[in-house]
Image (cartoon, rainbow, N blue to C red):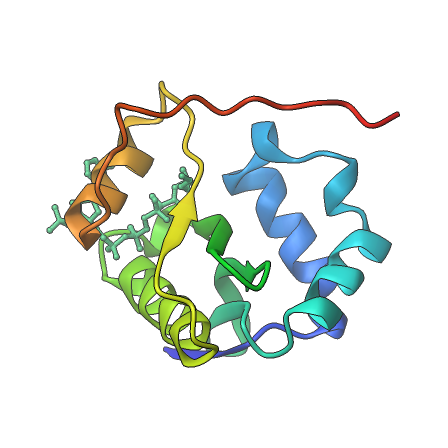
Length: 138
Ligand SMILES: CC(C)(COP(=O)(O)OP(=O)(O)OC[C@H]1O[C@@H](n2cnc3c(N)ncnc32)[C@H](O)[C@@H]1OP(=O)(O)O)[C@@H](O)C(=O)NCCC(=O)NCCS
């Protein structure tokens, strides 16, 4: 298994993977042009895990100049519980840290127990003092 930076050429494969792993979290923000823009804005930060030439895991990583954010942390079901998720998250946080950012946030659905367990196990602290408010710009 190797971890390498995600590229624009990976889009079709990762988008197909997300249909299995991440379907409910997908939105217009995951269309090709948006993901390409995200990768341009956060060069080298998002990662894929590759086994025998096949992408089996993803993490989108970036920052806004102040705080780091991780999205679409995902591993294909048949490759889970082998620390691939940890390796992806470690690399993503390393890249964000290297840019001088000292805190990273993730969003996790309340009913996603696997996701919550994963992030807690990794060392993320669950915030009880914050709500997420969202606004549709158009
Ligand atoms: C969350 C996810 C990325 C974890 O990937 P992974 O490669 O299996 O994770 P790792 O092997 O690195 O870490 C495993 C640890 O995470 C937690 N964990 C992972 N899957 C779990 C499960 N089904 N039930 C309980 N805890 C789980 C455990 O603490 C586990 O440690 P253990 O194996 O020693 O018990 C993967 O389950 C996934 O893609 N889920 C669907 C997408 C998703 O929910 N992403 C998170 C969005 S917030």
